[in-house]
Image 1 (spheres, one colour):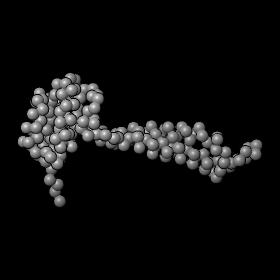
Image 2 (image 1 turned 135 degrees about the vertical axis):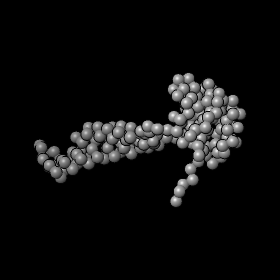
Image 3 (image 1 turned 45 degrees about the vertical axis):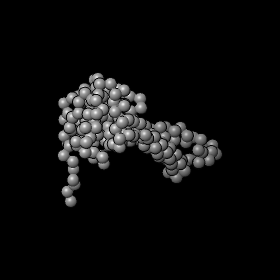
Image 4 (image 1 turned 30 degrees about the vertical axis):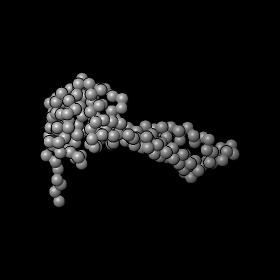
Length: 180
């Protein structure tokens, strides 16, 4: 079964200021567009909420990684001290949990850090050596002094002409079609 893919990736609007792209993102979201992406040379406060991005799953991934690390460290210590290599030193019990805390703590931090990095990479879809926006010649300016708002063609409200007119009504410096 062949998937019906759009002929373009989306439409990209170029803006000259952070306030302008923030206002444009708010208006686009209010108008019903949900598959929006904003690009800027520096963080713009409120831009993520304006395009409908509210929560990240990275904290949950870090928590699960930390719990897995803590259980792994504590389990390794218990297994080695009780089952694998039991040694009675000075009448101390085999399950002497206070001695297990440093390893448990260190593995909790280690697993949490690795899960944070790997979770962030996975959620961002990285590494991504190619993106359709690289086909737009002006997009190279997003790292210097320009701001961009992209409405993806997979958006339920997307219509090439209607969306183009809407983006042009936001008074951008230019509106560009993004080839896939």
